[in-house]
Length: 120
Image 1 (cartoon, rainbow, N blue to C red):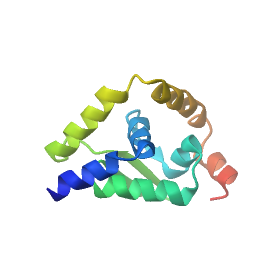
Image 2 (image 1 turned 135 degrees about the vertical axis):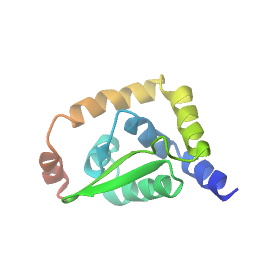
Image 3 (image 1 turned 90 degrees about the vertical axis):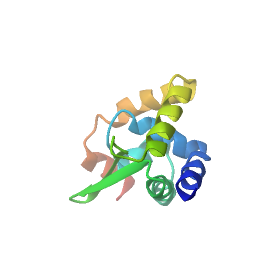
C-alpha cells in the first residue's frame, strides 16, 4: 500500500509528470531540468525528491552535477506500470511536444554553460 500511495502522490502533480515525460528521452542533469521548466532550483529538487522516493526515478552524481533517469527494468512492477501508463497516456499531447522541442534547444549547450547561466 505504501508504494502505491507514494507513486500516486508523485503522479498527482502535473509538473512532476512533465519531468517524467522529459526523462523518457534519457538522463538529464538537474540544471537541464531547471532550465527546461523554468522553476527555481529548490522547486525542481523538491519535485525530484518526491519522484525518487516513489521509485520512479534514479539519480547519480558525477563531479558537481546530479543526473536523473527513469527507473530501469529492475524497478518494482508497480513503478514500471506507472511509468508506462504515464507515457502511453500523455506522450502525444501538445504540452509534451512543446517540452520536447524546448528540451532539444536546452540540450545543445554544455552543462557548464547552463550552470553559468543559472549561477550554480
